[in-house]
Length: 216
Length: 270
Image (cartoon, rainbow over the protein chains, first blue to last red):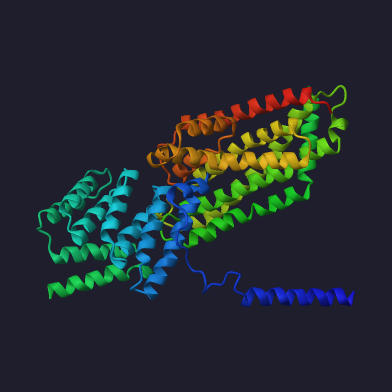
């Protein structure tokens, strides 16, 4: 009986030791994110009746990639972030968090505004009741990409959405007539910062700082 | 006529007293907890993420119920000749078949009801102080509808298992074909969708696509995902007519495959 108990303890110690120090298992500092191995079509097949949940996991991967990107700013993690946001929007086209991250970390931190506009444009058509998605798309197209035609198209759509607040049309018109001031852009970016959790504000805040220097 | 009711009661007791079922009952507690943990990692749409987490558990529990409880018990009936004891005059084979089916359905309803109660209670508790903008489509009604409708598609799969049992020889065959049915039902809708999309059609021969479509018509359609996506986002385009058609499809499939199963089971030399 003693032999059995001793063997059990030995095996338990072996297991715990192997798991804590071996190379085969998971450890938090080893695997923090994945880059995609599937294309969207394969991912849709694998997700089966759970596309929403797989989209959630894709977004969790974006959070991990974003943390890595902050540690290594020169890396191309932005491309992976764009890929994962695209997958998530394919699987669950109404997932609002996707477009929120596209309009913040993808546009400002990853410095991929054109890709952000593409995603926001996609969200514009998959969520016909929301005004903020096309508005943000229009704002980034104008401010970051310099594509006035795309900005007009998206802001125009935003202004005609049912729940669009009155300032939408006014702000859109001023932007598109090139009458907007840098202060107005700063004010809009500050309102965008308020909508984001603290960890995801860095990119927008640095853009605000740049604009403030321009004013001075 | 009353024999099928007796077999329903017997099945209910057999299932409810089984250890696997009791573990599944206890594991329903994990569904809302998993949803809550997952949603806590997100900024917006946390109600939607909570519902996604619960929904994943609906699939897990339903699959476990069908494969490890229903299929295993029916396989035991065949292999250990338990059905000899139940199918004796004046009880007919139909009474056995229908009684078993409704017994499983009753036990499954108990599981699903518990899931609804736990998920709604925890959801109401954690979201009570949250602004509506964070909740996406979450409400106690949408949560209940989501679990009810999502689990309803598994009634079709249960009927498919009964159909398989009507001709399969034992546990190995029953589990193998039931699992195949489940996997194919899982991937086929998305596979056909992908093949039907522009990038898929160019790569896939039309004949192959048609063959897949025919096979798909024989399988239960796990088509709750579309309804789930609408419910989790609180989309108002989901109408009562849509939900009724969805329920009707699964009741129809269950009826057809249960009927085919009875027909084959009557021919079978026990």
